[in-house]
Image (cartoon, rainbow, N blue to C red; front, side):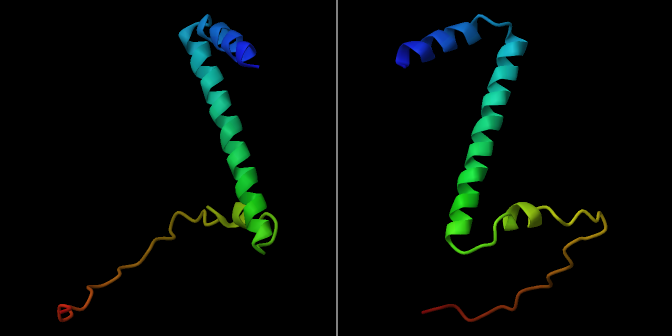
Amino acid sequence: MASFLLTLEAKIRELPDELQREVEDFVEFLLARQRRAELERTAVAQGWPAGFFAQTAGSIDDPTFVRGDQGVAEERLPLE
């Protein structure tokens, strides 16, 4: 398998720079997809509903939704 990878890498390096970047972007996309699938399996194994995080992450698409002022934290005595 190592010789296949070297051959594949050599073929990629023969491509023009723009196509090399496109191949690298595609590989990054595939790796990110694999990581998301692994995280989904972990979440389900820990009791979360399937698809929960994919459905909720970034689900607030209202541009007027902002975090309000948090105020000033009270000053406390230092720990000894």
